[in-house]
Image 1 (spheres, rainbow, N blue to C red):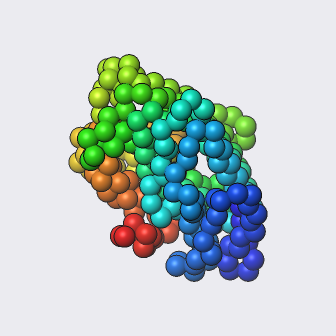
Image 2: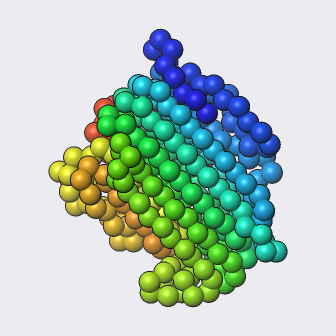
Length: 257
């Protein structure tokens, strides 16, 4: 997906191979381009590969969403691979706010996210993983999830994380999931440390911690209530948008469905 400015709007050029699609770009806020990623097969099986690449030219504004949860199905052995590559030029802003990824018991997944931001680029980014299907009584006692996330500014690491969740040990251990089903991360930059402190003081979700490294805000969740984490991130999004993007925003309609 290639976002570029055309007059007052951000327009999208894109191409695809395979079933991963996008809906027609929407403009609920005027110039910002809102895109919904669609995967009609609904789930990913072992051996599948999803490769998403985003390019935002200078001053382009994009908001990328999903209509529902992504599903990682049980694998007979092969690993599913997910790759997200984002490049943001000066003045570009990206909101990448998908719903959660649900890892069925026995799923094997390897994910890699790399976001390169120019000095004046802006990002609000969220990811959520659910291991097993707690509402159906399914635990994640087989399988593995490995992921790496890098945010680079002028090729210097702003945030780097490598995580491996292997069942059953890392699901239950104190150094892993501690028997919780959900883990989530929200990252935003640039954020003034004073704003970070005020948001931390107002935080009411006891399973969420919030910190700031330089001008990067980091919110982390570990618990069993995916809805509570979603509500927390939506509240953080509303609070962060004026300082990160310089404007208030209307929550996407898909969040209410």
